[in-house]
Length: 219
Image (cartoon, rainbow, N blue to C red; front, side):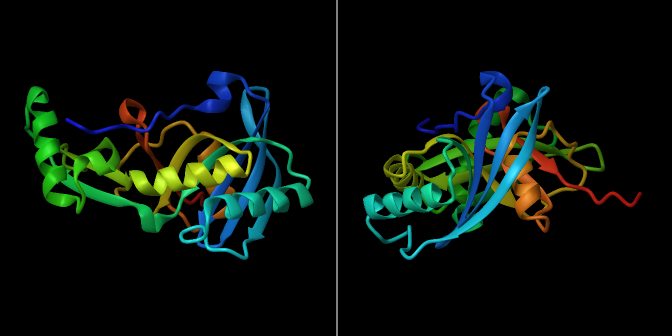
């Protein structure tokens, strides 16, 4: 009870939007890519990086948002819709072995695991979960969470920057190489382009949650 999932979408495909920004925040710096939907796939048309003079974590949201807007205007970035890659430092995670647990018992099991593993009350977090098959045929369940206060502050900053977030995700180190890759979305493409050292992306999305693994192509 009291658990809320991120409303995630493979946004470019479902909404048939032609353009979208991918933005990755890290302290005072944020990296971005401009994406364009072409023939059913998202193509990177531009990359950019902006260093803010104010710290988004402590400065007034209105001041930070206005600075972001000014920087985007100077760079002639006109798009408003954006897919956000959250700072890794915001991520909370609980990985639980769940092999053999009946499906009807999983909700209660995950709630107990979350209460034990997360340092905040459930109502203070936005959470999601995804199943990770193991090489031995078992299963682990990864629960990811982020503070509601962090998301609310970021949404306020984006509002003053006249940006509309349509998805939030984390770029994370690899959790489990046995997980099958899912379809790439705007955030995945942005992370792959801007942060090639990231080995996987955990997309927070309730029933649509997934982890996308990047593997080296030796060919």
